[in-house]
Image 1: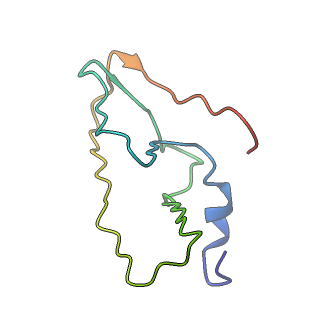
Image 2: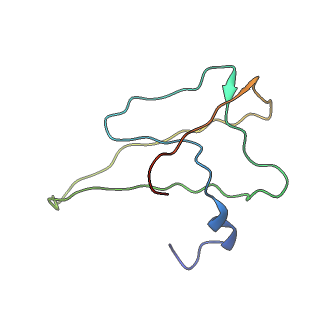
Length: 87
């Protein structure tokens, strides 16, 4: 929510990947992928991270990460992510 973020970032609402605590690494099948970008699309991708430390334990460190792979060759099938609940 920084005031310095580009205005076009407000349009980054399409989920490309998601992960939750305890989840293992996830890879789409070789023949599927999520299409993104193109004319009229934002050139930005937003990474949204939620931290939860209800006991306010000091010294906690996060060493998780995310890796997205891009190719300009479309896959045979389009994958998608279904979001349920409040947006």
